[in-house]
Image (cartoon, rainbow, N blue to C red):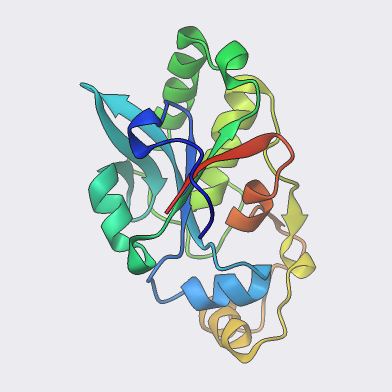
Length: 189
């Protein structure tokens, strides 16, 4: 999936990790966003062990190795905020964790709504960085801005929304975050 610039052991708190999910909606996300990457989370260490804070069912902390195993072929890419050494100081990381804690245990948002009642993976990461650091990692779009033309996407939209697709709903995708100019790749496998 790319070149390694750091070893897995050099991952840091606040790194953002991406993978191709094997979930039932992964293909629809891939077609709608034009990217193989369909799931993501944020890396936090507890007792010197890496975990991924992610929005699945429900929002929770998952051991990194378990998270990697759930992805397609065990492949993943890690990105880091540029200038993270200056920005992601311990107090900022604590604030990020506090912001993220308000979502812990919330249901996964199958409808990709922008409220805080339910949360999807890229929404979780975007909101943590926005609220804790006032940084927009990736450009918000509306559902109508994605490629909704593929039959798999059409079927998933019909399954979720019937004929009432919320085309004006704000949305953020793993691809939008992945392509942010604020991030740099630090590891890929």
